[in-house]
Picture 1 (cartoon, one colour):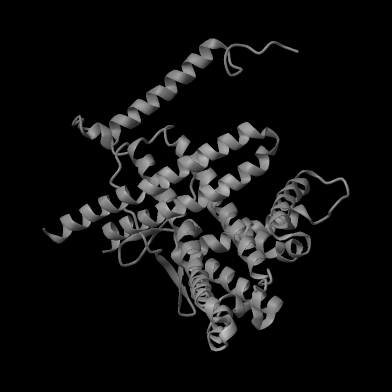
Picture 2 (picture 1 turned 45 degrees about the vertical axis):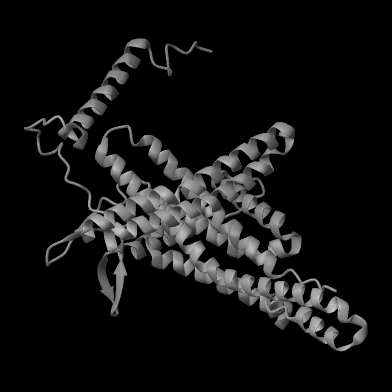
Length: 319
Length: 76
């Protein structure tokens, strides 16, 4: 086997030239950007200057379809759906016992999500909730990572009345999409809870049994002494149940805003870093964005399976 | 104080105070994770997955503060 030369596989002069080129690009980028503007460097060619990036919060409408507005995040969602469908279709078109590369990669991903489901919810329930949770995970991670592909947000659409917008924008940066995902998760959890436990599901939230028992104990002379304690714990239990009911609804807000905030903050961070230091130095932030996309998909899917497994847990009767 | 100045002041204050708690919380999660690995290195896989999940939940609280700050600057 030939001995590897120098550093990083290149001979030393080539490595030195590469480092010098990278440093030159970084320094030119720094001087041309807003950090260099503090030193009042004039007369830069127009292809080196950037105007301040304009951060838009709501997604721009690109066109209307049957009277409904189609935003750039909706186009990105459709693209995510197409990419995911094609990926899995090609991977499992001719499944083999000894899988090829794509099939084994997809099987590894699905197996990992299946382990997550089964560890949280048990064997039977984990299998039952696996399609929903894996759809959530794969959709969020694909839409988050697709937005990092260079050139994704660079196609501009110029409108007839002036103004321009990007053709595609990361799906998670639209509160509508994340709210839709959160609502789907919420309704799935509630409906599965009702299906599994019947109306006993409501018994988890409205626990007035202890309170009623305490009041009944007031009437018979035998148990009057312990009645006050029973009423006290009954009040606390009832209050806890109502608090749990409120927290069920707060889940919608927390799920949607967690994903929305992370994706939006990541987009703004990358935009600002690319604006401040144009060459090579935004790379660590791209790495951060990859990690954040994966973590947010994992958190959303884990919370979904957690809520589902809690919803089907039968409420233990207390005495 | 004019509206613009108040908006920017509020935005800065929101994010500064809002990331105080989650910063401490994330540090505590990390330190407990490290002591867990030190005690039982074989279970570090499961511990790592759980740590990422809990860190994501804690980070969300800081993101809520960021959302308020962004809303103040761009929408309000």
